[in-house]
Length: 142
Image (cartoon, rainbow, N blue to C red; front, side, top):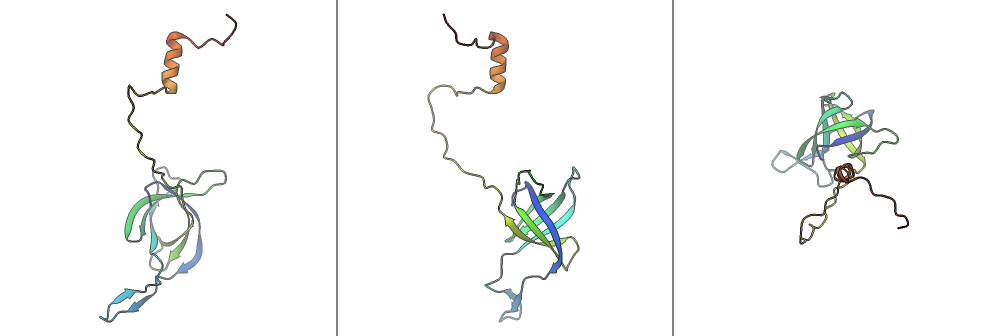
């Protein structure tokens, strides 16, 4: 999970149990091969702006910090859409079910080097050009 916002569906009332474990030959507990990947969230408290919740997420033994925000109609989802189910161990600990994956960063091939200076014409550059030299005149007859 990236450090970006994470949208969530409302949590369910049902408490889920921890993953099933079996006794190993050495007497310790080991996870079964069919065990799903561990994905849990700990809610730390309200976010800085008060519109979401700061969280710590443990997914496949990788710890990351993020923010939960309510999914709203017509608004883009900047992260994953998840469903939380409260765990019995703690009132701020939840199992995560991913309902929809977030947008993935695409990697593009690096640009080929070109001869000459970079060709950059931003809106600010164009506005400065027009304030100095004036706007282009519409094409007309000579």
